[in-house]
Length: 279
Image 1 (cartoon, rainbow, N blue to C red):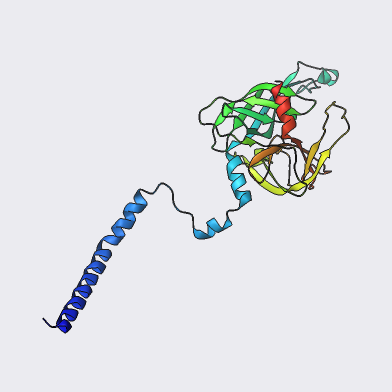
Image 2: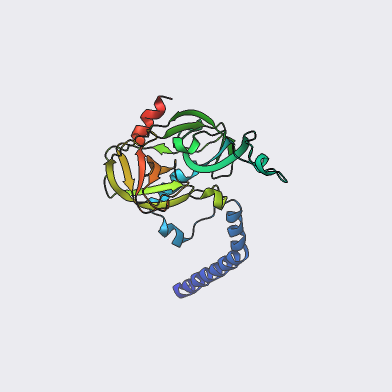
């Protein structure tokens, strides 16, 4: 057979094979895609979402599941003057038996041990008759108060459950003024009726802030100052660094309106560790 004929035959075979391949791809390609989707464990994120992932979003993802809502019920018995319906003058103002009142309040906390140990502020759980902890995954637990230090505003709770998330406690020594700080908690949680924590971001504004002993004998020393927004309900929640480690417990703010003014303070986590070891 002439070489020219052999070349023509080879080209023809290649063209036929390519056509068969295209037909097979059209018929079965969609089925392969469907099978791959069926057994996929998690959908892939769009490329634009991946582009937005950064150190802050990664730090939040690490700590957020362990940040809890601390719902407190306090029972108070109040004596007061009551007016009797259809009473007559003097008898309207007798002091009757104390009235029972339930006072609801909310704060934040962070699970720091897989056994269910939680750190929060003492002022969040002070005088609590019942403490209910709500996780971001909506699980609810009645918490036990393991210890409380009202002078330094630290309290430890425990809940008992399975597969509890927990955050890593970092090192508050050697913090750098100007480094990122992330406040996580439940500001105005009772109004929102949502167990998911919110996130605010700022920087470490100052270190080693000391305050005079207050009338209630509370003492705050070596506090971390941050401009990450802290509002009512954030108390007891974690202040986190860019590595997703807890470096402080958000405690109070300076504000004439009780809302964020960019001057918040957190108890250094190294000091908190020392306090809870004595419980």
